[in-house]
Image (cartoon, rainbow, N blue to C red; front, side, top):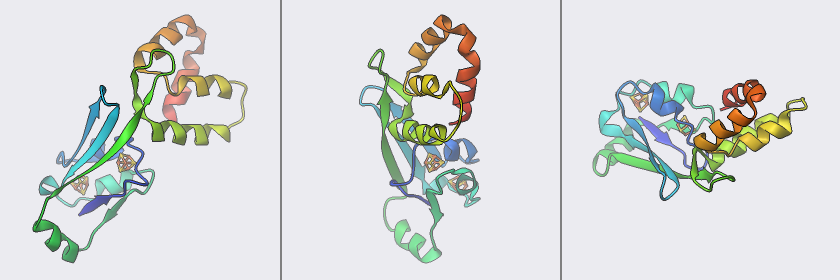
Length: 150
Ligand code: SF4
Ligand code: SF4
């Protein structure tokens, strides 16, 4: 059965998207600015798909003996992360702070004159990103490139 390491998880949603039994659900609170990754072991079928897609190796699979002790208590575990704030409007973006940091790390090693520009896109909320693109339509390819980094 899976267990999420809160120190490694960046809140990318990949595990939730891959889970065939909806045992992992993502809940965004745009008022508090948080994303919760909620794992309900009572729905888990033990397929390990979540662990295979996690790019941070944040999911480990626990032994049966630990499962017995878990069954005595709560079968739900939750990891809560902060959402990034859009530097333009101040609303929360659809990415976590950890995702932004991860993308920045990945992009700094890439060559290219647009990297600085892409860095500006990263923390924008969906609305401001659309506005920015309307003003900079010729840079659409930059956005596509950036989104692939997530
Ligand atoms: S795939 Fe990994 S990093 Fe992404 S939300 Fe799930 S546990 Fe966290
Ligand atoms: S092991 Fe399979 S069923 Fe269980 S949480 Fe992961 S993806 Fe979902």
